[in-house]
Length: 368
Image 1 (spheres, rainbow, N blue to C red):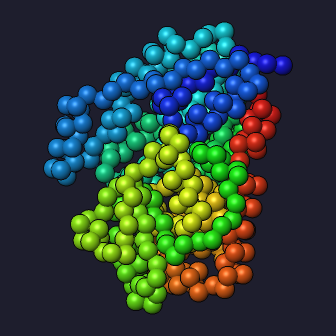
Image 2 (image 1 turned 180 degrees about the vertical axis):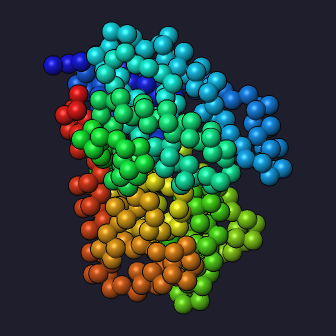
Image 3 (image 1 turned 120 degrees about the vertical axis):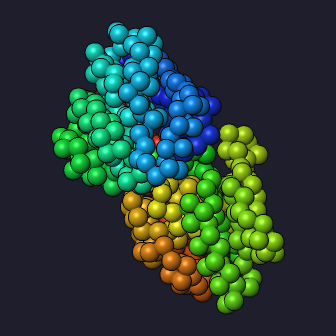
C-alpha cells in the first residue's frame, strides 16, 4: 500500500551532481517509485561570515573552537524550518543525514539515512583536538537521542554502522546497511582495451593523498616509463603540471551528458584508480570505477576494506606511504593480461552485485 512520505534534505535534491547529494537524489527516486513522496529540501540556513571569521581567528591564535555549522542557534533555525515545512499528516519522514535535524522533534515516525554519525565524521574529516570538547559532546548527545528515537537508521557501510552502534549505544536491530549504487548510469559498460594510465580523482589534491601518489608515480616511471598519471578535480602545483607524464583534466561535471561520458571513458580506459585518502568513509568513486572494470589501489582505512577484496578486486595499502603504494602499482602493471583481466572482471562483478540501487530499493521498502 502506497504511503505518504516526506523526504527531508539540506541539499538541492533534484540538482544533485553525485556523492552525498547523489545518494539523496537516488533515495528520493526509489521512494517515489512506489509511494507519494513530498520533497522538503534545501533546508540549510547560512552561517554568518562574521562567525566564520571569528572562529578562524580563534583557531589561528591557538584556541579551541566551537563547531559553528551545528551551533545551537543554527540547529534551532533548522528545527523551525522543519516545523513550518513538514506535513504533520505524513505517514513517515525520511531524513537525508542526521546532524542537521537533531533539534527537531518529529511527531511522526521517521527513518534516517546517513554515511556516518557526527561522532565518526569529526574523527575522519577533522581533528577532534581542534574543537571545544563540551561543544562536540553537545552535538553528539543530541544526535544520539535523535537516532535512538528513529524507527530505523540506514548507513552506507558496516564501518560507519559499527562505529555509531558502539559510541552511541543504539539498538542493533534498528540499524541497517543501504547499498549505494553509482551516481551515473554504468550498467551497459563493457570490458575494453586499457590504456597505460593511472587515474586520480579528488576535490582536495593534497588532502586526498595527491602528493604521495605523485611521488610514487615518479618512482614508478623509473621502472616503467610508458604510463601516464591522469588527474581529475583540484589543480595540482605548477611543478606537477610541468611533468609531461601528468595530464590534468580539471573538474568533470557529472550532471551533464558530456561530463558523464568523459568520466565513463576515463574509468573504462584507465589501468587503475589510485586513492590514498583517509578522509573518506565509503568513496563512491571506487564503486563507479569498479562498474567500469577499473580496479583501485587504496588506503586500507574506514569502510574501504569492505569495498576492495585485496588482491582479488584491487589492492589495499596499509600505510599512507609512497613506497608501499609503489609496490602495488608495480605489481598490477606486471600482471599478465589474463590475470589483470581477471581482477577487472572480479571488481565489476563485486560492484554490480553489492552496490546497486535495486538492492537499496528492496532494503528501503522492507523498512517502511
